[in-house]
Picture (cartoon, rainbow, N blue to C red):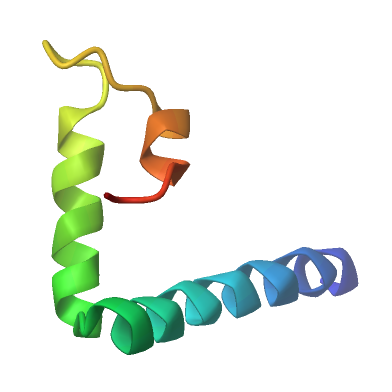
Length: 60
């Protein structure tokens, strides 16, 4: 249990950081950010040739 918490805490913090950054910089609501992530994950491995690592690159 302690190991799981040790791993989970930084991941939760990173997720909250992404949500806050999207809200402050792009004016994006949390649900809109989740929708963007879902669309991106649906595109992985298809005709687009995207990989999961491509989703980590900044949006332009």
